[in-house]
Amino acid sequence: MHFNINNTHRLMPLENRIILHSLLSSSLVNYVVQPVVAEGSKIAFYEILGRVKDVNDGVFHPIHQGIATKYTKMVIYYAHSLVKNGFLHNNKVSFNISNDEVNQDTVSLILYLFDTKELKDKIIIEITEDVLIDHHKASLLEKFKACGIEIALDDFCSEKSVRDLICDYDFIDIVKFDGVFMQAINKGKKELIDGLKHLNSFAKTLGKKTVIEHIENEALLLAAYEVGADYLQGYQLGKPYPVDFYERRV
Picture 1 (cartoon, rainbow, N blue to C red):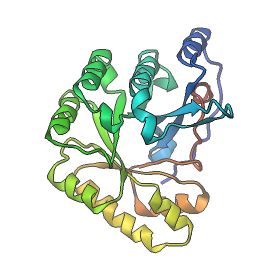
Picture 2 (picture 1 turned 135 degrees about the vertical axis):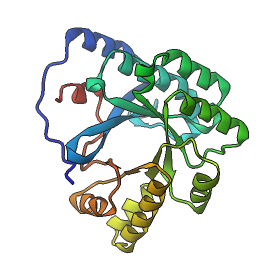
Picture 3 (picture 1 turned 135 degrees about the horizontal axis):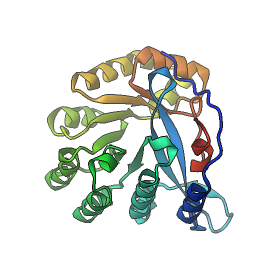
Picture 4 (picture 1 turned 90 degrees about the vertical axis):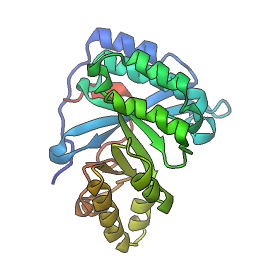
């Protein structure tokens, strides 16, 4: 199984450059994308990652959970613009919905914007493990499932996640294993490779696709191959870059 990306470049059409410029016109927030790679070096989808500018040092930093709610609708509009205009070679994109934004307004907005099967097929909605999914939120997420939108459970690692996946989370399509596994393996805890193998097999028996994140070097890439997840993600395979970087790659 080989996941390395080796692509050539092409020029982005002028009209796409104009659209991209308008998407990124905010001086305080910008977005980058990171490829999630499948077998045979094929890009399965791109994850959209938000960056917010620190007004003190002018540096863009990842949008953390504490302020994610403020930017949820912005990333939804951004994802729609990418998909609607055929950016990233018509690949799927994923984006995260924060805990507070799993509500009827967000669901209605997404279903309004992604109003055709073609558009719904191009997005994956990510929710993190720490989202408290009560019956009401579960019923909202099931609306996405019912109309064909895939849902990924991010940062999967705890016993609670395993229990919920078995008992309550039928609407989950993709499981993304928490980066702490790869970080620990990178520090020499090789026994976790077998643990990840078991988690990977468990998720697959439930019909879920699996993703290993934080693959930062060749050694971790080999460890990820050993685990046998469906998709891989990390700096070794593709760093987060602005859309136009990957838009030029074929």
